[in-house]
Image 1: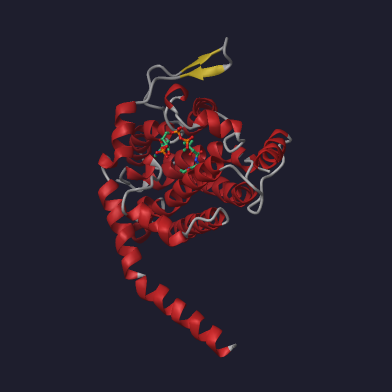
Image 2: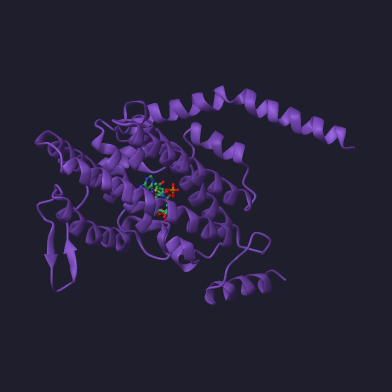
Amino acid sequence: QHVELQQSFDATIADEARIEPRDWMPEGYRKTLIRQIAQHAHSEIIGMQPEGNWLTRAPSLRRKAILMAKVQDEAGHGLYLYSAAETLGADRADLTDKLISGRQKYSSIFNYPTLTYADVGTIGWLVDGAAICNQVPLCRSSFGPYARAMIRVCKEESFHQRQGYELLTTMMGGTDEQRAMVQESVDRFWWPALMMFGPPDDRSPNSEQSMAWGIKRHSNDELRQKFVDMSVPQAEALGVSFPDPDLAWNAERGHYDFGEPDWSEFTEVVRGNGAMNVERIAVRRAAHEDGAWVRDAATAFAAREQENHR
Ligand code: ACO
């Protein structure tokens, strides 16, 4: 019987059809999905912090309202993704526990500080831009709930990307000081944004199997290249440069050549040694602990409702 289940799973993958929560799936497929979806969900939730840092200091009511809506959208993305992980049998409380105890990862990018208000625009443009590049193909991921969650997430991320670009365009039309602030912010975020796509293909232990299962649709390096190609003309239109002397159009390849990110920095950040890792987890842990009474009250309320309806 196991052979038949495996064959049916393989045929579904080969047909580019969707695997749904009640379908049989290999344990490795389930585990890989829980790992990737949990990491993705944690990234959305931790990702609220760098920009949340500027909520009280946004320069106008309009900018504050936009930023607030954006940060709330990220919370929503985290919640859809935790729900998608739950359809695989993961327990949300357990995932949160693994995040705050450092046993599950979240994206390296959120361990960099947001030092100026221009960072809000740069995160929208480059970080959400990289996220879209990585996530649009995930709308075709083989696991149904993940792929469907990605559709709405990508629509909202596109909106975020445009608001970031619009913010930077406004600043670039301002004073010399504002233009310098944008360039300085882009200089800090460019390399970390490239690292979001993960290690190079020859050092990415999960890619091959994840691509064979149709969980990932493109390799890390393919997506990184796509992001560079997409970003260079946008930088030109904006009037900023990227801090990479090797960045140049390669007519033969039909792509931009670019330099090598500092992979030792990436490894350190993923290991927990980035500028903000400790603070990000401490803030998340405190929010979780401070919210314990809400979870207790909701559980007590649900139990009482159930009792009343007996
Ligand atoms: N930050 C932290 N960890 C990373 C990163 C990163 N930028 N890139 C890779 N890793 C981790 C992987 O999780 C993996 O760790 P593990 O095996 O211990 O779980 C290890 O590095 C090796 O990498 P890969 O073998 O390449 O891992 P994978 O196949 O999972 O590819 C990728 C990584 C591309 C990030 C993939 O998981 C993915 O597409 N995830 C969904 C998108 C996502 O999580 N985005 C979050 C940021 S975007 C946002 O929230 C706005």
